[in-house]
Image 1 (cartoon, rainbow, N blue to C red):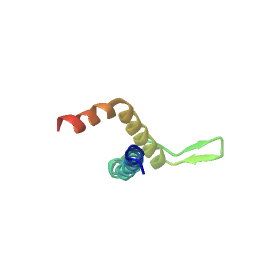
Image 2 (image 1 turned 30 degrees about the vertical axis):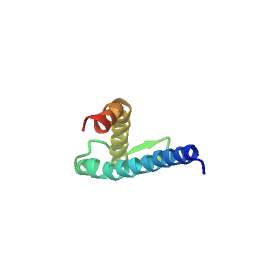
Image 3 (image 1 turned 120 degrees about the vertical axis):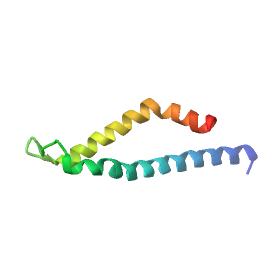
Image 4 (image 1 turned 45 degrees about the horizontal axis):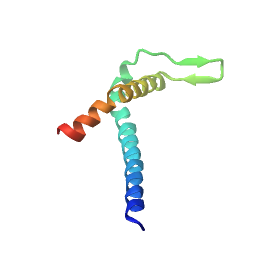
Length: 87
């Protein structure tokens, strides 16, 4: 293969592997971070229209997932620039 197409394929491969790796780390850490709050969860079970039953633990983990998503959108560029350039 041509050098430029090989370089392009490697770049895309690294982006895909990085995305899977970051998802795996995030999925693992949500349990570690939010799991300690399960015994003291302030939420009560929620029933929506008699169809959906959302437990207090599920609400707690949803709150953690939203907090992580907000962190990704607000701080991810600064973290990547620090790790990529300043360390």
